[in-house]
Length: 271
Image 1 (tube, rainbow, N blue to C red):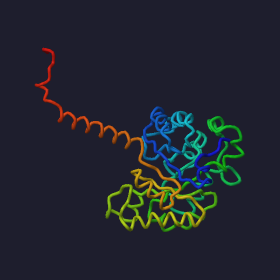
Image 2 (spheres, rainbow, N blue to C red):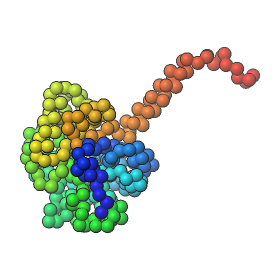
Image 3 (cartoon, rainbow, N blue to C red):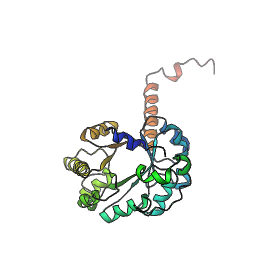
Image 4 (cartoon, helix red, strand yellow):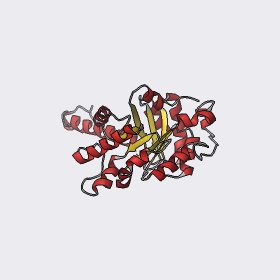
């Protein structure tokens, strides 16, 4: 089986730069995969992507060698198993609030006797190479999202779950969960209490021998998070990158137009 690039980087003591795909398009996924990310996550929860759209995206990403991950819509065995059968090398599951839910998540990701995953990796048999049945449990990554007050309260129990590789912090929902409407939801938190909560999760994960991942809005904040010790950082997503580049291009054009001569002074050749 082809080795999991994320696990390889972790074994070498290096952080993972993860990209995020919310647009259901194989070409845009192929473009993102060619930009140098270590991994790319297809977002089936909040992205405009369904299973039929995710499969060609996974196919398009394969040529680059980037490690494909999937954020599933919810803690549902069908969604999780189909994402893995399609070739995902890791699952990020939202709204894991208890040890029992974390145990269910792990069971859906692992084959018996470690779990209850049903065997039928239709595409993964080809995309992951030979040896999938024997090696998948050691290569596939299982991450539980910590993003509610309940999950924060149960953090130690969640992290004690056997077979769970780590936790993934969703700062927007975590802020809502811990602060209610006191702060607007969003990434790159600067409030002292939110930074403390984020770093508390990070340190708890490492004490438990687990990995810690963080969703970020900017490269600067993600680099800072790596300095704190995060093992995987996500920087922006295809939607934000497209919107930001388009907005910057339009703004540059408008500004440049103001600097050139008025239209009535330009020689139009008599027209």
